[in-house]
Length: 508
Image 1: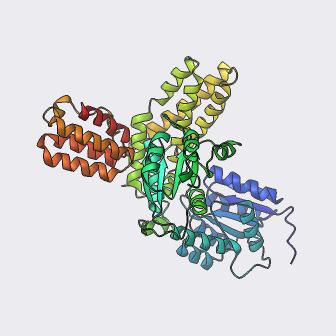
Image 2: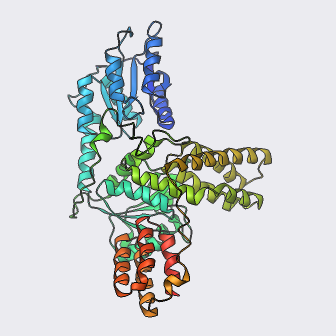
Image 3: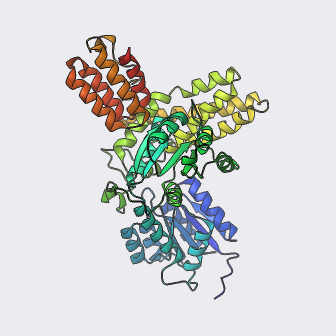
């Protein structure tokens, strides 16, 4: 059977995520559809009803997870809507190949599925299926998703080294990886990564590109000089998403490239390509996601636990990235506000000093954090600021344009940090450490021994080992109890910078 002529057909994309919505729109337009978008299920249904009397829609591409009304409920209403002169074909887009979601969708009569990340070829397959083209009983997209789910099960228990200097980004990535049953160790820069790789065996390395001490490209180059690590999968992980960035990573010796903010589908798809599935390893079961997260009204958080909205944030996207862990998301947002509320002032100082290198580094870091925390307005403003400052490294900047773009970024940061304060009190600065009196009565030799062991554990990113060392220290010296509690709190917060500063005081 020949493919249908899609020219002139109308398609409606319904997705609350602006970036995803534009990507799906561009794909459909490349197939010659006439495309309109809607930001919510209710807006999408209204658009369908308004167009019914004139030119009804032929296709709806509907995201599953949306606030207020999810894609399955919206599809159910569309399929039974008496106001529509023509019932469009509906393709459901979801980040999860959940059996219960697919069963609900089949009961509604949805015409096709797309699993994120969506590629043009998958979109074309799903479109052909939705328009009733001769397809195998099980669509290629469904078969591919089942194979990918099986591949993810085969690499469960794999040991991944995560190399990232920002502790908030570390926690986001770690939650995603451990949620899929992977074992994760941490390193704070390229130098620490090289030391860890020489001491331990890893199935893959996720390497941030821009880091202090030693960047990801330099670290990879040094590792590739050693024949033992010539085939070690090293995957670049960066907030850069510009043309040519992937090529730079490959040229540096990296195996592949993923972008931040982290998209779990893209991340796992890349890891599946590089981790050996047949290697014997201990299986680690991922934590169960509460069933409520997949219920029809799961997009409405319990108001006693978490707000339904925060100005400047896409909370659904942020929670989804963290496996719906509201407690961790709240903590990360409060930590971000405590540490980065004054970040715009740091950028301003660098700009006034014409230190565009420093300004670019600060804005780049802010952009990555905003993306991982779903601070969408701040992320967009930081992207524009980064483009401008990156250009300033090569040529002069328009002072008026610079000031305007900076003001927009500063306003977005202020909005984000003020919004977060409704979640609870902002944590005090954890970098301050204990008073000298807290350290004075710990035996000197015991303090030095503990400091060395804690530093080694931090270099390995081993939180459990840090806690074990501290508990041993507390058992050998009653005077170490207040200090030990501070260490344990920092370890639970993955505050490795704070631990190292406290360790320096302990060693003295």
